[in-house]
Every structure is written in C-alpha cells, then in structure tokens.
Length: 425
Ligand SMILES: Cc1ncc(COP(=O)(O)O)c(C=O)c1O
Image 1 (cartoon, protein in one colour):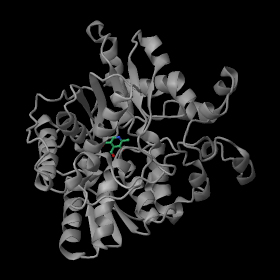
Image 2 (image 1 turned 30 degrees about the vertical axis):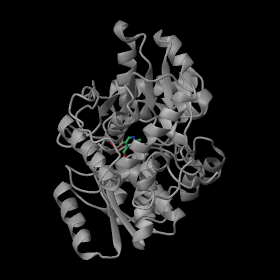
Image 3 (image 1 turned 90 degrees about the vertical axis):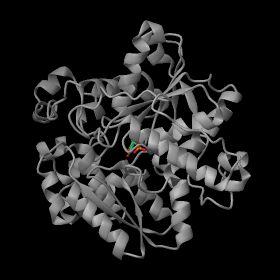
Image 4 (image 1 turned 90 degrees about the horizontal axis):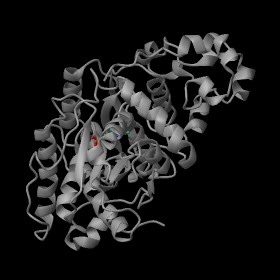
C-alpha cells in the first residue's frame, strides 16, 4: 500500500505542506523477538527492527532518510544526484537504486576503504545499475570536489556523506526519517507488538540515524535510551556532534510547527559505545565478525536476514556484550537492523564480474581474489551452474556444504579462510 504521508505529519499536520516527502519504503518495518539469541545469552527480551526489508528492491536505513531527501530533490527539479562515500558505500548503492526509481542520474565520488568482497561487489553494482563512479584519493580532494559541485554544478543535487549533516553543515531532512521512525515504533509499542525498549542499539557512521532516534525519543516522550555504536572516526562520531545533529533536526521541526516540543538534546541523553570500532572505518573486527556469524546461525537463517561487519556486526557485538551483563538481564534491548537483506544476487550475476568495464582507476581493487571461482579458475560453463558464483557470500564453503576433508584439500578454502585479518576490537 502506498502511504500518502509519514506518521510524523499525522501528529504535526502543519509539517505536511512545508517539508518535502515522497513515499519509497514499506513501513512500518516489522519488529521481531530474537528467541534463539535470547536462549543462547539467557536473556528473554532481545528484539530486532527489520529496516533491512524496508523496500522490495533494497532495504536498510537510508530509505527512511531518502523519503525526505528525495522529496526535496524531486521538488527541486534537478535530474542529477551526486553523493560520496567509501568504495563500498551502502549509502551510495541505496542512492542509485532510489534514483533509478525516479528517473534520476547518480554520480558517486568514492574514496578508499579496506578492500573486501563487499567492496568489489558494490563497485560492480553501482556501475551495473547505471551510476557514474569517480575515484577520489583522499578527504581533501573529496572536499574540493564536493565544493566544486556546490558552487558550479547548478543542475546537481548534492547529498552529503550518509545523508547526514557533516559537522553541523547540511540539511536535516535525512535525520527526520529517523525522528519519524520513533513515531512508528511508538505505534508498535502501543499495539503490543513489542514492549517499550530500554535501549536501542544502532550503528553510528555519519550521525543522522542515531541522532534522529535520539531526538525522536525525546519528542515522543519514550524513556528508551539510544546506544549509538561508533563505526567511523571520532572526529565525526562523538557525543558533541551527535547531539548537534539531533538539535538541528529539532530546530527544523520547530521552524515549521511551533507545537513540536522545544527541547534540547544534551550529551547525557544517549550512551555512545566506542569500543567496537577497531583502527579504521570498514576494518573487520573479531567481535564484529563473531556477531555476524552468530546471528546468522541463530536468527538470520530462519528470518531471512544478514548483517555485515562495517556497521551492524559491530553494533550487534555491543548489544551481545551488554545483554550478558547480569544487571541488564531484565532490560528490553532492540537491535535496529540498518543493513539491506533484499537479495542482490540476480543483479550481481548480471554484472558477469566484468570489472574491466569500470573506470580504470577501480581495476586495482580486483587484483585480490576473494572468490573461489577465480582461485580455481573455473570455466564459464561451470561457474554459471555453481551456487557460489556471484552470490553475496564470497566464501564458497558457506554456500555449498562441503566436508572437512574436502575443505582440507581445497586450494580456494585454504587461500580464503584467513584472507582478511580480523582486528582485536
Ligand atoms: C548498514 C548501515 N548501517 C548504518 C549506517 C550509518 O548510518 P548513519 O550514517 O546515519 O550514521 C550506514 C551508513 O551508510 C549503513 O550503511
């Protein structure tokens, strides 16, 4: 069913004609109890919010942000959307999918991040889905590029990294998506679908998602405390900056509707988790990988979802450690799944792994092989029939069940099993 307005506009009707918005997602997203994880951790109140299935074509947290951001873009009449992120950016992928829905062109300015299969597959997908991708070597060059777009490209709409304000600069429209999400959650609590969470665990990469939830909880009057898990550099992700993003969105709401509570978010209104990040954005950590593996076995297989290691794995690791503490056994804990669970394998297969079609500067990211079929040099005919070929899981032994003996003798297994070093964090 296509919604004609977000819940926020039901509560504050003055916002309706003043804040741009377009329906993209299937909301509300379900809330589900994680019984098996609960049994394992001896905790009876572990929940998940399924933003990973927020559309039929691509899920994840960005869709909530884009309902407001793309509302503005469509209103502006601009036809080209430019944005930036790491070479494996989910935000960029979401922008291409959503842009295509509205007949917009997308340009992605991409900077380096640790190389993984996820990065290789994302680059293939951006290109296959029609985005123009431009490699930018470092942060300073990126800032210059984005400044150039802002000043000289009048027909471009620029979305900042993660669709959040950057150090206080930029629009709060994306953040608004997660203020709206709290109104949605409140309805689910009132309907008895989930008890009132004591804590919500959410990744924090550019502040908008977490800050929206923090502001939303205070506006709605929920006693729930947000625990953002830092997954990017402390220069951007710190308590001051998260509070600044939250206050900025409240100001935006107040500008258009004076009946919104005039409140201020301070650094004590949320609990930032900082121990799960590792040394850099995108690095895989031991606890993050363990959380990814555990949740897939215990919950993901049955409920058809996955998480990853840059954002959601680190976040779930924080929630698992928290749930183990005796003083938290009675607390209601909600893990907000911000990753995508809609299968992209069909698109991936269509790329034929033809990375030579990407701009030359990206070819070097394919020098490392994360795929069994490249290591074994399987022929085209064999590849096409194999379930491990171009599926989102790069470890073939996770796709095809093989015996311990077969693994021992397999060159792909031996080469791939430790290909990415996990950090201690
Ligand atoms: C899967 C996932 N979770 C969380 C985030 C972080 O959201 P935010 O940038 O609003 O902090 C991102 C950002 O790209 C993401 O891809």
